[in-house]
Length: 243
Image (cartoon, rainbow, N blue to C red):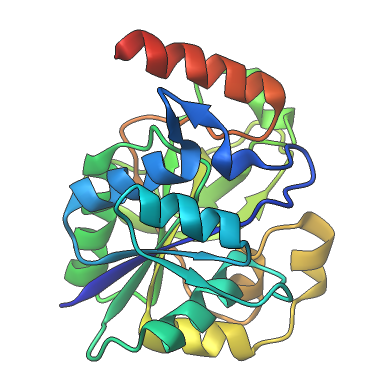
């Protein structure tokens, strides 16, 4: 099966404007993510963005980038437009990798792709074990409830995605990466945004609200996403220390 990775990215993030072009070890966050996706080696990689500055940065660092409309409400909608523009034939799966998680594990990306192929799933994502109970009420950390307890071989169905929860079974830290069959992506972008999706600011709820199953694979660890200035400073320290 043929997989294409498309990374949606834009400069106008509300909490941390200009985030994709912030530098760690002299390389922008978006280019770090692009290189991670390339290292996973599951297919060609593209960045989809509404900003010429991101296109310029990615291409300068040896990557492929597609300029898309400024009117998209979600990353999946942006990816769909990019897919039409790229016009590569016979693509079976699209990996949607978030542009603000430069330390996502390469093995986790590969595992999600393998699980999608093995189970012939419509849509898949990743989740990690929650280690700190404070995270349950942290609205910046999205949680997923799965039908079965996750282990490295389990690709259980998601029952719900929430920003805040009380303690219960089979609850995990959701990681912002999706893999869809091209058919599912086509269907998804034609659906109206659901009230649930708008209220919770979670595009995956549009899928669940329209009976599109989302399967969940267990990630090795929770990557650090960059949502705030504090996140950026913390991640910069970790990545620069590693190098």
